[in-house]
Amino acid sequence: MLKLTNLNKRLGELSLLKDISLEIPKGEIVALMGESGSGKTSLLKAILGLIKCDSGSLEVNGMALEEQNLAAIRLSTGYLPQGGVLFPHLNVEENITLLAETASFPKALIPQRLIELLSLAKLDSGLLKRYPSELSGGQGQRVALLRALFLKPKLLLLDEPLSALDQETKLALKEDLKAIFQAHSKTALIVTHDPEIAKALASRVLTMREGKLLSSDQLGGET
Image (cartoon, rainbow, N blue to C red; front, top):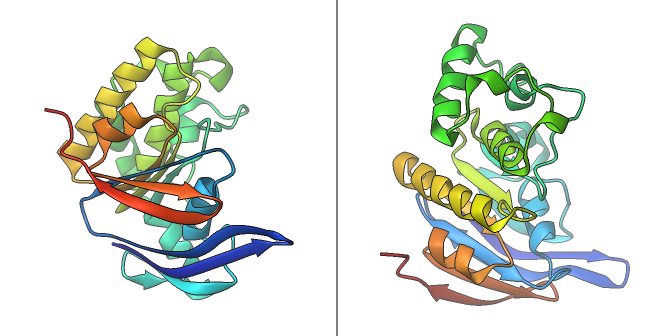
């Protein structure tokens, strides 16, 4: 599903990624932890081809990360950037379905897909015509997650999906994410600074420091 081999990326004198090798099989949820600036977000961007590595190889969903495969890889990968980053001039429905036209998603199937996703995230359909400024933090984060899920991606890349939320909202959204992963057998790489979130969502935790992948710990998950 995801295979990284000896990835390296420098930005001037700074090494963003140092000899990163990682393999995530289908259906596994992996958490990526580390201090700010350790390279976590850079790694997600490299997987999407938003950062071009200086050396190494990368395969996503069986496709090598090359120019001719870039569009297909991005459309088969759901990406949730840190903070969600909804477009303020688009309403909720428009934010969720943003990539539908690019992916040639059948227009006739969009309403049903929206219903499925709203049910999944426990959101009311009355929110569809609202704008991001009219949403709570938890609602906005759920909308951003639904945008990442809309095209039924094979791989999810989630960058701090539970950051900047109050504790009650964070706990509720954590449970929703667990339910989504379990019900839909998603493969995911989740960036988080919270060890409790990592333990709750992932079966394996990776640690990064100064661009290096340091360790991999197997977790039993919560019972």
